Length: 363
Image (cartoon, rainbow, N blue to C red; front, side, top):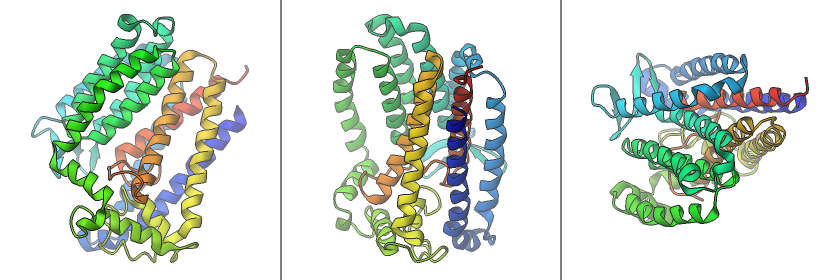
């Protein structure tokens, strides 16, 4: 497992370094225009990396099994934060969404903390109740009710994409724990009409679906971002236009250093660059599943499975959105996109994954 830990660490560091370079490349012109400081976002991103590294080393310094007794308090604290962020004056509103706390120059997104807290809680619940997971009342419904309450709070921000991602991961963990497929299928069938209403009753979500199906129907409105993303990816060709030579980052592609940084990678580094990113994430996932397979206890097994699956899902969704495979959704590319809370908690997740891997090594 030592080799697996080294591989995970190396892949993560490579992705973080790529993120540092690409954030500067994608944001420098816009940062200079808006803040008169071309390294405005780079400096903040480096600060986030330092915070994430410190917290990662912290979670690696103790036995991860000790988290079990804090699973419920951590989740309870996360739910309190999700409630507080909705209160005007406490939560920061940006673009009609109230998802952040503001602390000086830093913003904190409690839903990212809630994701990790939920994974810890579900892993602990399954490790305690694995023999009862097929039972509707004692094994299946309790974690589902907790998930439902958490998802409702995240939806209230509003953030449908993060809610769906968290729900998918928790359902996967419950399924692999041995839950009755009929229970899972029943909940999924009930969720489909709810999801339909959530999407098509909200104008901006409905517009995203329309733009996804035919972005050229409204090229200067709802389809603009996807069109510009496709232009960026298409302009890169095989080897790209060269690092720092993107045209789409020059006020054409919105969120070029955050949600659509993969498109800038495609433009500047070409197909070679985007495939390299894909292979790095595939390598991370394969090494992560080795930790899952060899974890020495049920809690470590499901905690590592949840962490690897969450990072993998966010990467797939981000790259799929940039490529036009999925409707537009603001999920960052793990370790690469600019975004403090996401980067920090992804790094903490890697710290926990390495902790589980170390615990699986023979003494």
